[in-house]
Length: 128
Image (cartoon, rainbow, N blue to C red; front, side, top):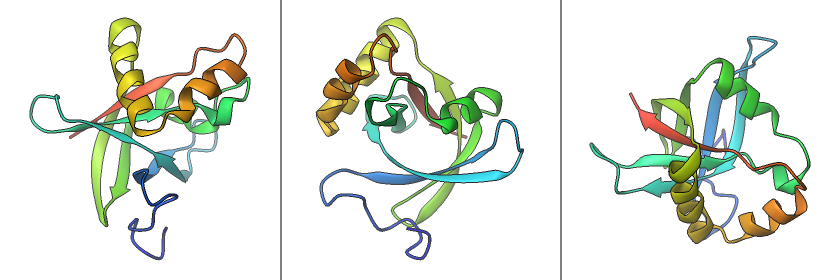
């Protein structure tokens, strides 16, 4: 994806972005390809929704902790890079975003079942 400027997808039907964030411990730039959903209902344009599913593992992915410590990130999608602020969603906001993400990739429900007691976190990325 780096060579293509973020235009290559992990799937032909599921949208993919490159999340560029700062390591929570190292402080180094980290790049992670992620599936995303677009929330077209957001005021001022579509926000991005990313799910910290970690494939249904019992622990959060590293990028989850990176976003908690430094919520200002960059995302490359469709060949363009922009700055976003990450917001961890809770309650009804999380549930709505979860439904949107599941519409794009229904596998998240099975990940939630596999993850045990861990409630899979969902972030809204708001363009700055």
